[in-house]
Image (cartoon, rainbow, N blue to C red; front, side, top):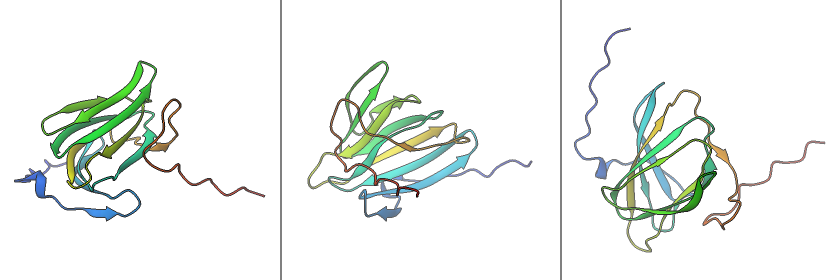
Length: 144
């Protein structure tokens, strides 16, 4: 295998992605390989990423613009952290979490690394002890 090319993004604050209307968030993948995926999320006011967990993958968040709340529940405790510009949060595998833009007017932007990317899963689950900011996932149709 040959050497990979250098990837450079002069300003991740202005990276655009395709908006997902249901979550009012856009994800742009900057780089992906088995070891990790690096992406930028732009989240409109009130939007975010619904409750989920990863069975084998860490999420590493860095705030870029605006303010987000990351609510979480895990075996080591639960809580809410504020992701502001320059803030960092490491979410271990197995921890239920959701990300929400708490602003009514300002878009929020964060940088996210999934590591490892190989074996990535996104399992939609409800919180056990707190209410989610987003509606639950639709029920799967009954098989008959």
